[in-house]
Length: 350
Ligand code: DAH
Image (cartoon, rainbow, N blue to C red; front, side, top):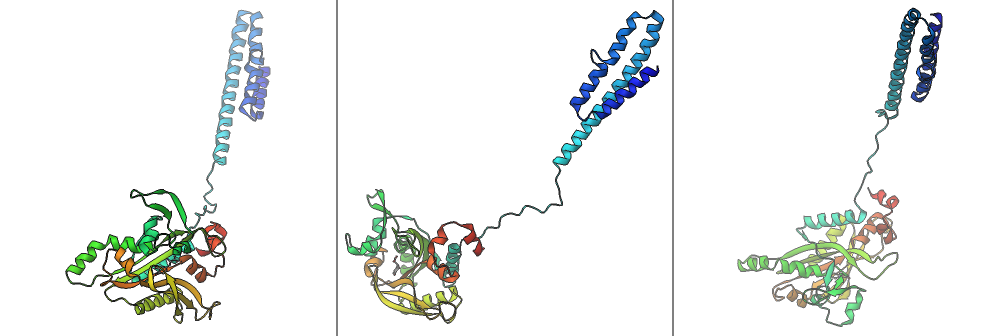
């Protein structure tokens, strides 16, 4: 009896000492397995008398039941501990600081373009967009560049080895000037209707977008941006161009003392033509003339290609580089920084 009690205590102690389920099963085998201590005891009953067998058998079975109960209790305890550990390992620590969502921001050139759009928008200019793959006719011919004329080489163009449905060669547009023609033609019906009912039709639009040339250094990139401007109507003059463009630059650079100068130049699509230079009234670039745009009164041949009569329609066009305006506004000296996609640079403009 005392022996059985000792055996139970020993089993309880060994089960309690088993740190894992596998070791607990080994301990179980030592007591309840084929050659385990309890099994051995049951086997030894065979040599006893019927009465003794009955008495001791009952005691041993009681012991076996107690050991099995102890085993089950330890199994449950180990399983609970394991679940507990698992829950702890996967626990969500709500006191940790949250993972920050990366803050995005507009690219400095996109910002410059948005600024251009809002300033010209406030002066009544529509904003238009057009294709980056253009026809040779739109890029050059419609803009008064005669076929094979050397003026075409003013722009080192990327040609596309493909023709459009009308058999015209394609290129990556070297400037946004084709948008003058596209926009005017797209609105031809509106202008005809306006002219017919005697009102004063006009076209007032800017067209920002990507442009391409075979060119690459600190101030030129093969892909760059331009913004075209066009204002034509019945009596739009160079004076209007001066007022509009000077006002635009003053707003854009937040410099009310900024000055402009119109320097005679040549473009096939304007006559007369001028480069627009500007000078800051303050800041590190103060006092230096900086070239910012090409401009001029639209050539009658170009007005004809708009589908309009140059006897009645007159006005001006200009083309500027938003990249260059962004460089001046933010004091960036290498254009390529804008297009390298380096977040250390770009995140400074957030
Ligand atoms: N398209 C010209 C260029 O890329 C810029 C330009 C000059 C546009 C004069 C104009 C203009 O509309 O009138 O160099």
